[in-house]
Image (cartoon, rainbow, N blue to C red; front, top):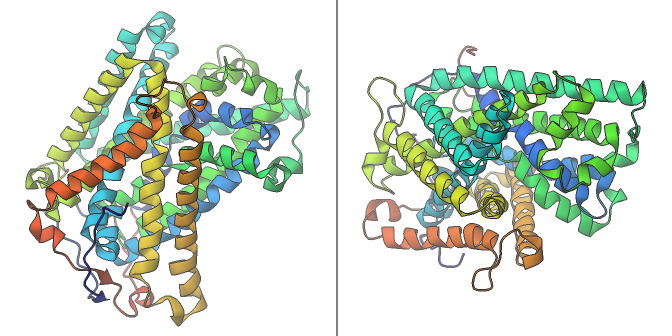
Length: 513
């Protein structure tokens, strides 16, 4: 990204940055809502249903899928530490955009804001399609679930509904998230418990009792582990949404950051337990069957629960995809809201509804763009949609990675004041960022091979690279075009944390859920 320029002036310690008042509703949600939004945004049930089979199918992974989940968790936890400490200093709804602007310069900040937008738009088509399909499946409308036209209709309705909820207010969004996530986690826990009880009790045909080696990443060769992690990183993405509502949260400096770290810990527990139960119940053979890979939980539901309780896993995936549709709109709208208030994009995107105190223009714009993208990609082909899901990994690694780098750079004058500072503010975030850059590099090498993607190459370049890497390059181009129009933003100087900032006490607000 050499074309992304940053100010050349030397950075000087700056006062603790004051968050621009954007007009959002203050103290509207508490820590629990931050945590719920963070976990719900990853869509655990949907992510497992769509990805677990492909992870197990990687040559050399098989029953070691739980180990892949553990390894993929490591860079996420390290980057979550960066979110925690950057949010401590600057609880701005723009999160990575605001933080990389301060630490790495406005050019890098702008492109990171674009990366958040790009990743969220790319994933919306898949989330909305899954929500539509599982709605039809829940009511036995199998013909509609298989129909492209009805999938598009259902996807558009789901996006419109979730956009309306986000438009109406953060409290309504948080309450709905608590309901949807509670149902999803309860069903996944019940599924895992029933599956493991049957494995150790009635020993279903093909079942395998879990072994300690399943959780050992060193039991796999390096190539299998890296390929599995490429897929594993995607299923963790989204926990940062709980930080994007920081300006609407109580204990804004501390609560959202702590929720980000806790979200990743809850996710690794969910993924390891459910993947272990799924593998144990029928062995890896069922999961690696190409006919089952795109919907593992639905396939397992009939065996684990039996009719009609197998509908529970349909409900789990439905609530997962619909919840994530909503929580994908939330952070995107707040990123563009922040960019507008920082005078990096047109000010209309910074408008807040006078009654609902939500970023109304940004929210509606995200909904509209998502609908246009969803209709277009579903009309093109199913393989194009699959490649769009693969492409999401590139902007994810980009903006997560630079968040880790930004934390180290922003706090660089504090790093050598204590061992704790060196590890938590520097080493851990930087290591997490570099790991994700490494994952992105390996992904480029893997997905540039035509045999590893669903669609045919265009001009010799595969579709995931066109959408992922090409999409990021479009962001660089738009950033360069924007410079003459947003001179005030692009003339910003680099900043560092005020001395002693990390050790200052933070006034905690009373608990509010």
